[in-house]
Length: 241
Image 1 (tube, rainbow, N blue to C red):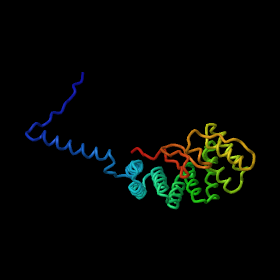
Image 2 (cartoon, rainbow, N blue to C red):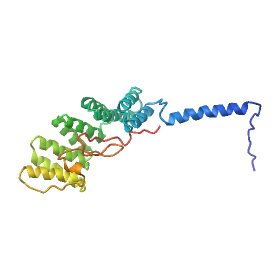
Image 3 (cartoon, rainbow, N blue to C red):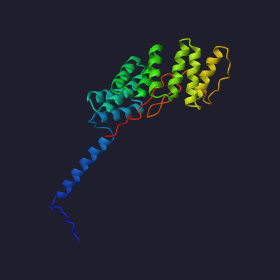
Image 4 (tube, rainbow, N blue to C red):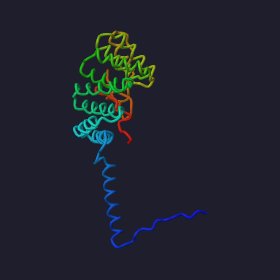
């Protein structure tokens, strides 16, 4: 058997204290880093921004996302930081700033349907219906089974007076997700508006029952709801380094 060679420590007086001191410093540094207190990279700043946003510190989150963008990390990091900063700006009702950031994310990831969806929601909130419809149509082109895009596009069509087109999109949303209560409600309301009465199927959620048109998105931490500002938080929002 091969002998295992061990290195013996120098046990001069004070040496153990020095080792303890070094270990303590390393512990403080590592703990501080793990808590997001000492970010260094674009990924670190993005992740701390997400933590701040989840705690309600929107301004602090925007500051961190901006720093992450300035460090010019990997494309996926930049796109995620732009998307997350846009989400934060949406929560402050900064629709123009959000649309600008979603557009930047699209430039970096032109095949990511979530960025188009989120920009469509922001444009819908600004009553820019033509641009919103174009974004939702792009989402459907990339991800044909994404029910939320059909539901929102149906709402835009109804706002433009195309009730038949709206009913068609609500029906496609239901085909993609037969459990999508909001789409049943919206289709029922659209049919009722043209005297083609169908009793709307209401959600058990009273908040849902009060609305006839609102968005929700896919997860990653992207969010889902019946609020008008429904945006998708990114699945990759927290980036592993």
